[in-house]
Image 1: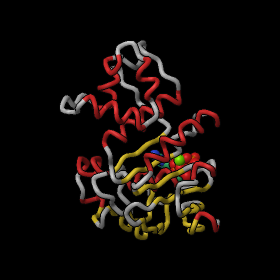
Image 2: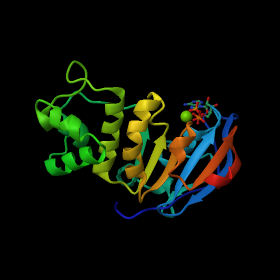
Image 3: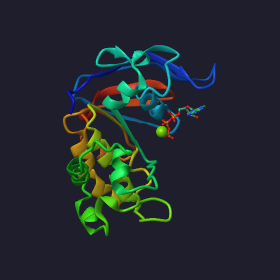
Image 4: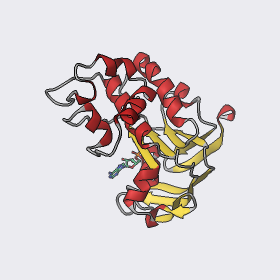
Amino acid sequence: PAGPLGAQLDGVSFWYDPGEPVLRDVSFRLRPGERLGIVGRTGSGKSTVVRLLFGLHRPVSGRVSLAGQDVAGLDTRALRSRVALVTQEVQVIHATLRDNLTFFDRSVDDRRVCAALDEAGLTDWRRALPDGLDTVLGAGARGMSAGQEQLLALARVFLRDPAVVLMDEPTARLDPHTEQQLMPAMDRLLEGRTAVVVQHRPHALRTVGRVLVLDAGTVAEHGERAEL
Ligand code: ATP
Ligand code: MG
């Protein structure tokens, strides 16, 4: 990692539609390398917190910061080089496996692409492909299972090696067995990085130190995982 960064929300309130608050006065602080789980009912605001940290929205009031800097003041390119977001939606593009990881950046070495696939646990799959990194993926081309697509999403993050990883229920569309198969790669990805992990299934939160419980946009509880 490029050097771990801390992340912080200070008194953050947010709405999508004026007058309908989605988050109210949410605060938490993650030291570099610390991992926070967020749980809470559907609609409680978990994804909104993650999207604020990813710079997709600006808070209505309060402050979202990374490494002590207001996210609102960071340009998108700088933010994207430090923070990765993994969700259940994986866009497999109609392009080669290599380009699906590098997004057509020709300066990325094949060895690094292979290493990222290996870290994601896709070694056997990659080796079985007819054309290796030149295999074309996507619509009408080489098919992938939902689990493999999710691992591809993790491989993209391993390649970029960001200091901060945000996960918003990346395994939600997988069956429990497939989800289990992803856990080692997810654990490896979180290792040594600052992370916010939204997960419904509690066992997926075993790698976080602290858990924040959101209820209708407010922090209902916040503490060590073992205490909640
Ligand atoms: P889930 O567990 O179902 O994923 P969540 O905790 O992630 O829920 P959010 O997606 O953060 O919840 O949504 C919080 C509130 O904001 C909900 O009331 C939701 O309807 C509303 N909301 C989310 N996205 C938008 C949007 N783009 N426009 C308007 N309202 C939105
Ligand atoms: Mg959500």
